[in-house]
Length: 401
Figure 1: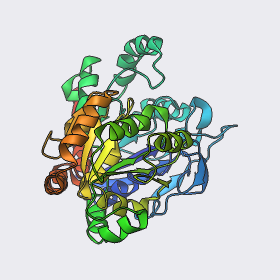
Figure 2: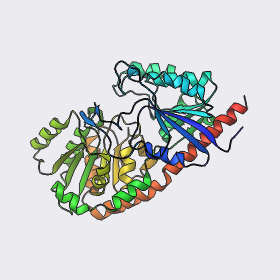
Figure 3: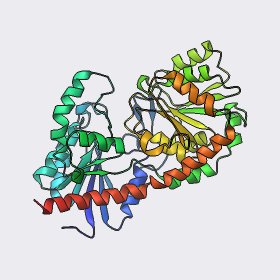
Figure 4: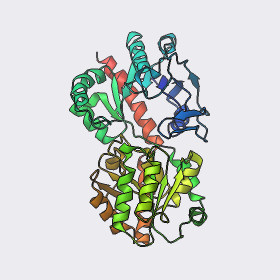
């Protein structure tokens, strides 16, 4: 039976800079009474981030505006990137001791605490919602045996959910390919705080930011905003930028990681040191200025379940070009209108896009404006509406059995 208001437990691995604002909006929704249970406070507290290779904490509020708790992590080696890095046995009691109408698990299944939350929800007969941001079975490390294993295990795993929630249309297609029926599948869009990005990008002094970079105000600027990791393929962009050879164009890298020195060295070898700029790790409060001062975001990743930087860039008025492995591409990019999609690893195709669009600043501006308008249909409001629908659906399905 449907309720006017649901008590919902949201189980999350750690505070995330783009997820916390959505939780704040959920807390204001008339049909939701939410409690967020964090398995770690990494991100809200200074912690070594292995991807960036530095200690960091996000400089925007992550724990304000909604009810949350930190469930103690009993792992001997706490971490977010290995199976036993999050071991939170308190989730069992939490799920069982409160009369939650639904449990939504945001931790990935490659995490021990996911299984604690799943088992507790099934044992205590709570409506259970979980999913994945993946849109393909291929793993990041490319090991083919994992694909075979996933084809066997994942259909059984996702059938344990009352409703599977996915953040992209490609993710929904993958679930259908695994045999998940449409009545148990809800697309909850992968979103950021749209209003925050629009507000903060509108007050940016674009010329001042470019002067700080040493970039002329009328120069076309290509932006890479991500960790400098091999699977993000930042070297592809550098090679494509060099091959395109658009007069007076500049390339900006906002991010840190193990490929930083190789990228700097390669840029020097290509004679591009004066036109390739490395900003290092850029915290959240500074990103609107980075996007607003750029013309085209490029995300060439070979493994990218979604790519939330595309949301951020487009909301800041920056067009985007992404590889066909980026989950956000199909949902957020309209080719030639708000951006481009190119085959992953095809440097010639990417360089052709750069040659095609960078010389035309007015066109880039139009594309950026269209990108911002297009994001109105992919917002926290749609995400929360979809989650409420998913909870309704879980209760209707339960009533039918």
